[in-house]
View: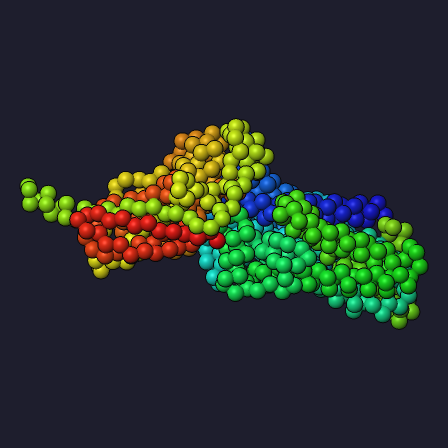
Length: 400
Length: 225
């Protein structure tokens, strides 16, 4: 019992640390400081963990370097979480992966000095994974679902780390008419959201809440609607991500109209006129304006669908999981809607824009839990026994 | 010797003129993040303003690159000047805002501040680069090997910092001064030329000019956009 509760708490800690990482990553993009440290995984030639404080505290280096160090910490936590969740049987695979990464890192270093950064990254992460495999700590694996989620997080955190590095190393590459920095930055940002949701779902799977959802079976006709809402939230995050990485968050600077119209003109003369209203010399493109408009339209759609999901959730009694999730989802999307408005009204203030990213991540995570719970209810409504979903925890160990 | 002098003076020409701005110029805004940065803020006693439009006497517009657009002998190649334009980072601002250089000419990039900057060159035709300048007085020479207009340099450590470099495949170019005046000097033979003025915000305008006896004058106007 004690082990399960502490494992759940540890997973919550990892989820919180990941949310913090999403926030710092958001600040890096909001402030435009992603390339303040031109090298990776070293920082100005120093080992990431040995950068002098005076350099760390200089301007945008603070945000970018903190993001890197924090990400390393999250990587370490995820490896430990995988080792703990998957138990002693995970040691063999962890050892193989760790050794393989070290070998590949050594080969890369020999093959091409230009790949030194990637080689150092692999050597570092491989060493951590190997160390986790060597932990002489006998633990039983959690339920199969949790183990699968833990391994997914294990792989994803490494891919995510590599993408973050590639975003720096390949910043000036031209890929499909844009730069490697933008392409890898967008993929990195997108996977960051997915990774956060994954870790929160792992925590939920370890919580025992899924058992409670099953016992509260009530027959929910709205599972598809909730899933649709979650998909719309994800689409909204992708649109926002595109805008942030194209620095197009203020492609339309007014509200609720756009340049005084419901659907602004995007002919060359109009674009020049819009650009003249802005400080600085950067141009505005028709695509940036359209994406901004889609983001606004989708925001209204998301709000409508979540409002409907909230109404569906109200058919359940107070304290019911679906009702709680529906209420939480609605509150989050209202806050998120407000933050979106404030992002425009404050001329895209970095802290507001970052809060918009963070609350967006939470909205997506709650949407995923809600979809999961709604599907569980739908499934359990036709089941005769609450054994459809097995959290792997004895009932007394369930954290409520 | 006299013949040699006569030959060289026959090719020494210059175009002078003034760039004026028309329309209502938006006021400069304070770059407020400088104040919020402990290190950069300490270097300034007055507000640091944006330089989108720097207008001097008689509506003269500064920071406009002026260059020969057409009319040079076809196929003629030019040697890059030995002089090295300096792009300085001082007080967390690029000085000058606009630099002009020729293909193959060395451009010195300097950090005059007592703390670090990074120089992130966002060239599209030339090779982009990004390096850190961690020590005061550090100079990194760079050479651009292709003609390209408005190459943006930014500092991500202090993201409000940006400067621009125009690179040409001939040596006939200039940047307008604080009053909009410019002089294109060099071995410019007599003849008719198309001259273009390029402002980062207002865009470009062209004019025709004829150099006679090594002299020509051309005034151009750019509209606020």
